[in-house]
Length: 105
Image 1: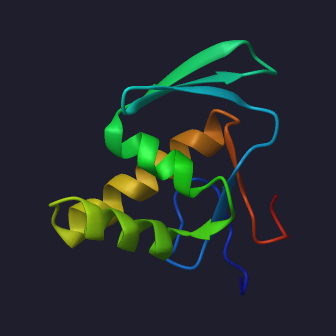
Image 2: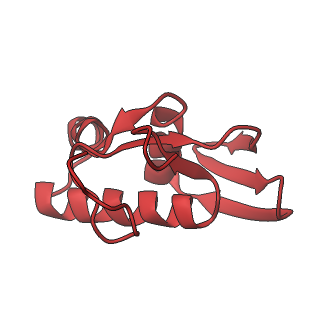
């Protein structure tokens, strides 16, 4: 990715993210609860977060995720991008997702 560092602040639309392997999750009527197996900590996601979680079961770019959310929900594009990037950063920091561009996964 041309020298772009994934330090939690420099995501771009081309950054690829994928759910970490071996996470246990359960769909609870639109919301999701995820167990980080390594830490034993549970994480909850609302309906939109759950949709993002389902999307990243396969490697996806931030742009692909943003576009899917924009298609399915009524939200301003700028707000959607900010919220998607924030959620993805939180998932990576919690050990629930990884950058999937090869250099940082």
